[in-house]
Amino acid sequence: MLKCFGIDRKVASIAIVGGGGKTSLMYALAERMVTKGKRVVTTTTTKIFPPAPDQSPCIVLLKDAPNLEDLDDKLSRFGQVTLGGSLLPSGKLDSVPEAVIRSCLEYADHVIVEADGAAGRPIKAPEEWEPVIPGSTDMVIAVVGLDCLGNPADAQWVFRLERFRSITELENSQVITPEAIARLLAHPLGAFKGAPEKAVLVPFLNKADLLEVQWNMTKVVNRIFPTAGERINRIVGGSLKAAMKVRPYSRPG
Image 1 (spheres, one colour):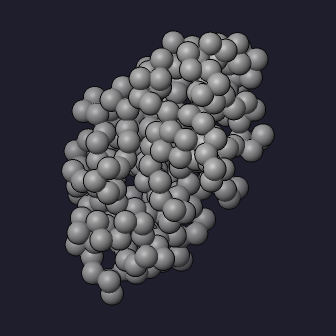
Image 2 (cartoon, rainbow, N blue to C red; image 1 turned 180 degrees about the vertical axis):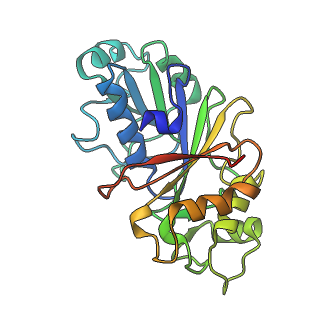
Image 3 (cartoon, rainbow, N blue to C red; image 1 turned 90 degrees about the horizontal axis):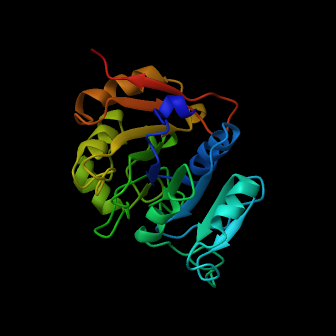
């Protein structure tokens, strides 16, 4: 999986944005990294639910360790640590400041940040204050759930609907197409809004197992690439939940 995304030792800081599936991707990447002997911090600049034990073996709250004093020890013991600001009344882990995320790289080989929220919808456009991508980020991965394809651009399928319609030029009665996804990826206020100039941009098309019969991944990708923007040279597609592998697709030509 790491090779699919082009993640190597030079890609130390990763931010994940976009539609539903970000949390699953974050922990899936972390698991692969740990199996390769890497030390990994998973964290958020928004809010996330605490991980299950099979997602992350250790949680550290910044309010209990403001100077990250035991992070090195915890990483040595567990390989992966999930860092949250505090535990909120909602049950979620609160955000971690960018300066702290940078400091994590003194102890970890990789830091993976969930930098966006989507309320479980498969596709979204960011509001003015979203996403919260650290300036030190080396790679930004934008998640799109392919179950949105062929469905109407309405609140059932889209988070931040008015923003999405404005960017993709879709109206309420129109269905979401690969070209609409491409416009979302390419637009300066779209999926990769706020990505650092140096960062590698990688769309991840998740839930390939839910594609309607008229679609296949190659067909979808080939319709996205022409207008997805010059910075996007790789698209990763597949399914995190189904028994399917993810694979990379390179820009044609």
